[in-house]
Length: 508
Image 1 (cartoon, rainbow, N blue to C red):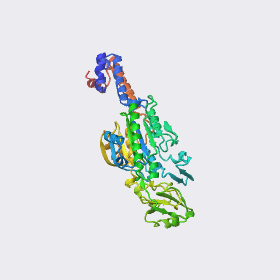
Image 2: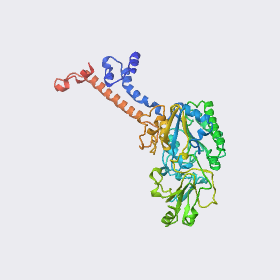
Image 3: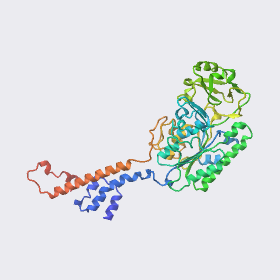
Image 4: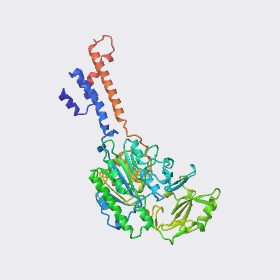
């Protein structure tokens, strides 16, 4: 009987073959029951790998790193051996169109949601929400108010809802409770914590025992943005800053190698924006054109949100619309559609946008910086770096362009979770992957996918149900057959009832 069991286990078992081993062929009742239960086992086994309790080593791992303000061309400016190592072992994208406005908070939230700022609600570093009657500033504790963030769901929340674990080291918004969740592991933002300390903590999270290790983590570092603002990107002093970032990247790579994670963790290194050189000779003073008592200044240069006082919208707009050839003024409803920066009440009724290199101030007594960002996201100097390596990526592959919102569906694909509705498209950047996405995970352009809030698969339940139905069905057939064989033939039964209909099918 054992030999027969092994034989059956190595072939496709169909209803016809199962009926062929019913007891009237000489098989034992135990063997019959085993044969009938085989579909139940077979139907469940393909889904075992989808269990939320699967081993941590079987899960894909992903680390997203952002060096704030690291412009796309910095890697060519000085020797950057660690960036180039990633490029040779993985992929590089030459042109990354980030989200408008090209500021820190909007773009970091776009990276982990796949949404433009008008959709995820973090429209600037400084905001006013007329519905909440509250102001937001990256320099105050207002950033910890969940209401500013709950218009979107960041990736660390999605992966936890799918049964995974996440970690976050200083990423903007990651120390805020969003949709009732913090990352599984996170660091409260503290700019004084060194990059090396942040890296060690992230590596510790990935190296934790099975069931405790994170599957996805984000890591943020404030440079070279701070130096770019202070020195200006054209300063020769920036060379040392850029080289220092490459050294920090090298530290991260070495820590991953020491922990045995280098070949397991997919690593993406990017930024939120670039940096443009400013000049004290290129300043636009609003006091020359409009009375400041007529409006409230909401966000800072080079894209300024203007909130006119009650009933003063047309007057303020009329004073600014043609005020300076180096500044554009838009009413919210007239902001160019390609900016995807119109449909949110946190975008002010009037938006001022300076041309690259120009600064908008109320007057020259304000603080002036030698470098800044926030300009039109199609401007080359606003573009960030993008390199990646790991088991999910191709090797030594150069891609011309992508959009930063496309990164979200790519990360969801790597992590094997379904993306929430987003503005990105996996199809646009699937060539970065070492293998093509399956139809179930590929996202055609602009298609939104219904959110998946759980990693549990219903296939085992369905398979079990079908298996039980099949077992009961065949037991009924078996009982009928045995009963019919043991009953005497009735003289007066109809012709149809007296025919051995099942016997012909069973080759009896």
